[in-house]
Image (cartoon, rainbow, N blue to C red; front, side):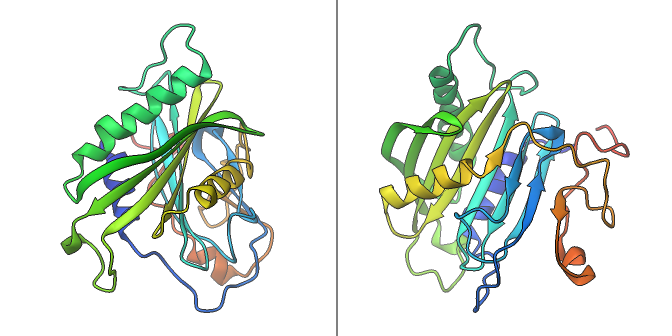
Length: 244
């Protein structure tokens, strides 16, 4: 299995415009269930407007889902397992705040610096935030992107990217959102709202399949809607996974 998915997928998602709809559709009544029973996410979350388009990546030690709503707003949820992750290890007796800082440092010092299309970055805001999911760390960065790597209709090559990091058990959850305009209070509201739309641990949905799609629990929609969902790769607890 190819390593290094996290950084490349993250930056590709920052640069892509996503899948916009001119007329927002009705709010989705569905759930995304992450691999490894890590979490479930309501796609009818107040953070989203209309239907949601998704792409997914996963590794044995974590996974990621990119989400675009009908207004073309981008969100992302990563999770990583402290026990299995090759780089981010939980120190003995570390509290949640220490672990949140450890994970955020991993993104700032290892993930983002590897990306050549990020020309510069700056931390604009960092604070501890309470939510129904527990205490988390909120960080907002400005990212100056390589103009050549952006879609031609993008006028400003600076984007504002927020992280909300919190820990549950052996997992760290990293909620992310992109803005074109720096609005720290709105960023905080979007990230916390999305985090509070999650349940941990999630529902183990791999026992139920819809056309070999095991990550989305559709409670409405047509066969065409089901066929529109695409999985990026086989995940770590699929029975037919091939070892690397």
